Image (cartoon, rainbow, N blue to C red; front, side, top):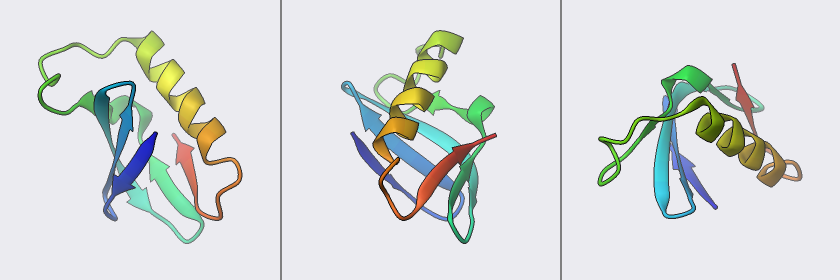
Length: 74
Protein backbone atom coordinates (compact mmCIF):
# COMPACT_ATOMS: atom_id res chain seq x y z
CA UNK A 1 0.00 0.00 0.00
CA UNK A 2 1.26 3.43 -0.92
CA UNK A 3 -0.29 6.59 0.54
CA UNK A 4 0.58 9.95 -1.01
CA UNK A 5 -1.18 13.28 -1.27
CA UNK A 6 -1.37 16.97 -0.58
CA UNK A 7 -3.02 19.10 2.07
CA UNK A 8 -6.45 18.60 0.44
CA UNK A 9 -6.47 14.98 -0.82
CA UNK A 10 -4.75 11.61 -0.44
CA UNK A 11 -4.15 8.92 -3.03
CA UNK A 12 -4.06 5.33 -1.87
CA UNK A 13 -2.56 2.73 -4.19
CA UNK A 14 -3.84 -0.69 -3.19
CA UNK A 15 -4.40 -3.95 -5.08
CA UNK A 16 -3.60 -2.45 -8.48
CA UNK A 17 -5.98 0.51 -8.19
CA UNK A 18 -5.53 4.04 -6.90
CA UNK A 19 -8.28 5.69 -4.87
CA UNK A 20 -8.50 9.39 -4.05
CA UNK A 21 -10.13 10.79 -0.93
CA UNK A 22 -10.73 14.49 -0.47
CA UNK A 23 -10.20 15.98 2.94
CA UNK A 24 -7.90 18.17 4.97
CA UNK A 25 -4.46 17.86 6.49
CA UNK A 26 -4.54 18.52 10.22
CA UNK A 27 -1.88 18.71 12.92
CA UNK A 28 -2.00 14.99 13.74
CA UNK A 29 -2.87 13.53 10.35
CA UNK A 30 -5.15 13.64 7.37
CA UNK A 31 -8.93 13.85 7.82
CA UNK A 32 -10.41 12.09 4.79
CA UNK A 33 -14.02 12.34 3.68
CA UNK A 34 -15.07 8.72 3.15
CA UNK A 35 -17.85 9.54 0.68
CA UNK A 36 -15.48 11.47 -1.58
CA UNK A 37 -13.61 8.31 -2.62
CA UNK A 38 -13.24 7.68 -6.34
CA UNK A 39 -10.89 5.65 -8.49
CA UNK A 40 -8.19 7.36 -10.53
CA UNK A 41 -7.47 6.45 -14.19
CA UNK A 42 -7.53 3.92 -15.72
CA UNK A 43 -10.25 2.69 -13.32
CA UNK A 44 -12.08 6.03 -13.06
CA UNK A 45 -15.16 4.78 -14.90
CA UNK A 46 -15.70 1.97 -12.36
CA UNK A 47 -18.36 2.58 -9.73
CA UNK A 48 -17.10 2.46 -6.12
CA UNK A 49 -19.16 0.10 -3.99
CA UNK A 50 -19.73 0.51 -0.26
CA UNK A 51 -17.95 -2.81 0.27
CA UNK A 52 -14.86 -1.50 -1.55
CA UNK A 53 -14.92 1.68 0.55
CA UNK A 54 -15.29 -0.31 3.78
CA UNK A 55 -12.45 -2.68 2.85
CA UNK A 56 -10.10 0.09 1.78
CA UNK A 57 -10.81 2.21 4.87
CA UNK A 58 -10.18 -0.81 7.12
CA UNK A 59 -6.92 -1.62 5.31
CA UNK A 60 -5.73 2.00 5.55
CA UNK A 61 -6.52 2.22 9.26
CA UNK A 62 -4.60 -1.00 9.85
CA UNK A 63 -1.65 0.23 7.74
CA UNK A 64 -1.28 3.59 9.55
CA UNK A 65 -1.75 2.19 13.04
CA UNK A 66 1.94 2.58 13.93
CA UNK A 67 2.52 5.81 12.00
CA UNK A 68 3.11 9.15 13.69
CA UNK A 69 0.73 10.85 11.26
CA UNK A 70 -2.64 9.11 11.02
CA UNK A 71 -5.45 8.99 8.51
CA UNK A 72 -8.91 9.58 9.96
CA UNK A 73 -12.15 9.01 8.07
CA UNK A 74 -15.32 11.09 8.46
